[in-house]
Length: 450
Image 1 (cartoon, helix red, strand yellow):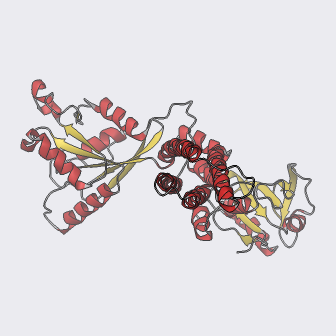
Image 2: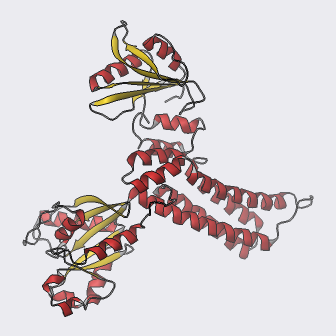
Image 3: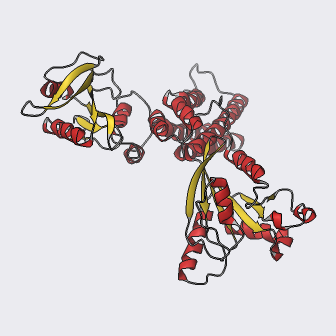
């Protein structure tokens, strides 16, 4: 698809509404505006206009805003039509735009053009999508900060430090006999250590930001009748899961989202883990194990009144074996069935509670907020994504390799090359070094019309 095309899309949500918005961007915008409105509206002024079809009949009446290039969202000529929000009216207006030469925009194509024309970088564009999809006030505030370029500024500051050190090292390599100040090994070591600390700080912020955007997935698992579905209902605050005394009631994954500490908490209730009684239950158990493997946190629920609850070591080993590498929290449920003294014998790291009475739920909620990384209202977090974490991890690994090269062989060429690769990985975040395939994947997740 060429950026020489003029694109159009409905930018308001589907369905009926008071106002419907159409956006047009591209080189033919002014001509199309004159053909549809009868004149070109004055720049950046809301103008009352009639939207007309090919025969001159009125399709709708509303406001038209014209933005000449380059002072527009995309950096191109843009026109925004704000009419009535009926689906039929919007469809008629969009068809007229296509008749006049517009192409229907792809998802995210307006933001993609803004990136290609230097109006925003990729991280800022993702901030736009994160703001639209924000599931909490904290996530919305973080997305606005990324949209305004705060995350990009942190990345660019690290890039500037990398560039400065790399330039000095490469200059000393390329011009050994010239009047270029040599880079002392001690100075390189100090600056590398400073860069590595800065990278780790940014990675911590990015992890918190990614958790804000994507949330925490907590999978509730355990043996049949341990009270998993009852716990799900307690955390959800509603009867989202069927609860019976019959083992194997839950056959499939049941998902529900709640907010804890300003972060989306994705709860997943699963089938009881045991030898399956039939093919349907076997499939449910397979799906449960797959969900556990992809979880951010495993809540392993144990029936406090069951005989095997008396062996904490075996229970902990069983829970850890389900998904090595996934953090595990053991939840001792049904403590209301035990004598008060017996209920207090659980290991201190376990969370003892009763999903039936609500005892201990406050401690579990506090634990979930701590795992998610609770965000206060005044938090300065920025939104981030898993691809940002991956790029930072690769850049950090290159810095570690640069330090190994410096302290090992001492070859300046190797140090400079590792710095170049770190810089390239870091540049993927803002789009300085990003493949067309990745750009298509990123912008393809956006709304049409954004």
